[in-house]
Length: 534
Image (cartoon, rainbow, N blue to C red; front, side, top):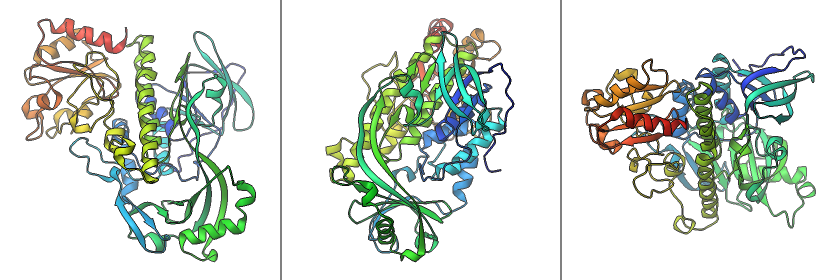
């Protein structure tokens, strides 16, 4: 299957109805569709393009992103794509792609994360991942409408009504409870809502020159994910999975250079020839596109029933590979809240937590990406105030009530111990425990999970008392026999063996009791009320 799952739809005079309308079908939008469909909510997704963009975009997905895909059954298929070729986990500065390497380094995303996650990073191209996600989302029931163009929308207190042109140009309307704007940095929804951007919208200017060429003789066996040429503008080189196409991005100063007359066809060929180290007869230029590197965050992520995710909400320099991962985590966070609300488990104020949680993460991520860009330009990590990639992409923390002391916004994943607002620690489970291999697998189906130590039976009884059918809350007592040899749930999660953690559907600890409670049912009920804002 090619991942293009849209079919023409016949529309009457009545509007189509859906709980969630997603505008934008790139990696963030289609992830949101999959996350909803996997939890029983059938969204409609609109994407004006019919195919997957041929542009070379994200090429690595950090463990926290892969954990989300693991939870909805898509991770193995993405890893299978990675295994089709030798893993590309290095970057280099080269005289030319065909010439000597001046410096080589291993990408931090390629580090071994097994101590803190059941998932490793996936080093795959965004387009390859999108094909998997499209097929998975459609199989789960998501209504994916590729070739359908969002025109505009209006809101009432109870719904959003969108005007759409289908793949034949026929107008129709969609009524939705909520709209998720995943239409990118240049999308119309944010601007139409009057939401401004805070930051630098023109951090640097580059010309992207795309080409076709047989790059196998240059790249086979080198395990390179990306490269920089040691020349004027430090050209950035990327390439397709099949090694039959690529792009060279070369910087220029817009104050002194007009890209249209400056980048003539002859000059473009000369740049690509020098960067690749190949004669002009060995490649064909297929496009030249100026673009501006930006670093900004939207001043709000919500307007009524419309929510911004991904590049519609924030943009950061590509250094570090954080952009797509941050957007996917927006979708993971927001869809979990929407599912809880649409099921009737949560109160409407829960949706206010989306911006309160995700916007600070974006601000941190943008700062870290800009700092890395400064490092590329010659400043040290200390001068730039850099955290590790693992801290930025995996170890960030959401603001939460009930934290025992002031905590950093991000830290190394292994340093967290179940503090509210942090990701549930990964602890390996013994084979067959609840059909899972990690504590993260115990959070499933869009439900909350109550996890206790070996003396936490009273907490499990309280959970069943509050939710006899298990529709909202799973409860698991983790005895030593449940854990892999040498693992300790209580120590890793900062509680005693009679304590408990309450974990949200997105894998974030929302409440904990370090010790047993005199009235565990009342304590857990208060924790649930706080978590669900009901």
